[in-house]
Image 1 (cartoon, rainbow, N blue to C red):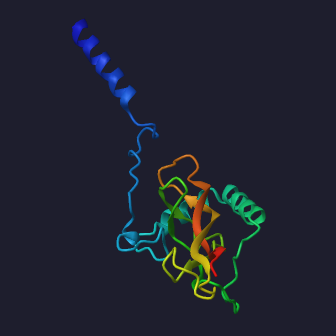
Image 2: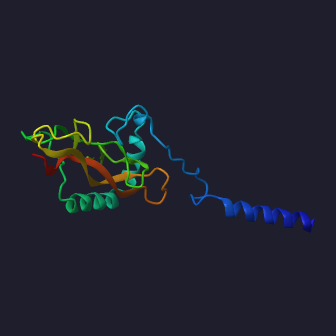
Image 3: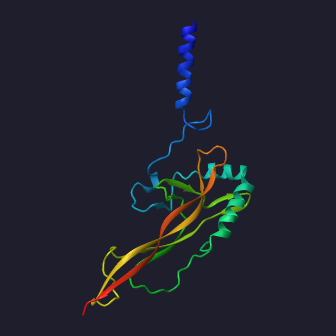
Length: 198
């Protein structure tokens, strides 16, 4: 009897040592490599998401409203290039052709290469949580010569990126499912001009 008890105790110790760090009684976190909304896209963000967990986010926002509001206001106050509320593009001229847009991503890849759910277009206690980013992507192949620069100069178009901070929702964090994470998004299409060739 004591031998069976010893074997049972050792098996339990091994099982407890190998268990995941998730909260007891909850499923083990399972993060998808690529969400459904990004399966047929090369962009590291999704603007539309059919399986966006809006009700889970609303419930969590209602539960942690004051804490999330403090995070959200801090994010808005500290981020100097916030473009929330901007919807129109002004007339601009660039050396390399590009497309500019103001987007409200639902999911995006963070700087660690992991897809995250971004809190966007979700309402809690009559407050609409939105996060907007200005993106600009090159319309010309990266590395091509700049169309408006004379051919006597060595030039090439380059995609420049900027880091954005977004409030994200983690459905597997049962203690506080919100955080602010960094995301790298295209910011401008620049022209690098090199040597002059007469």
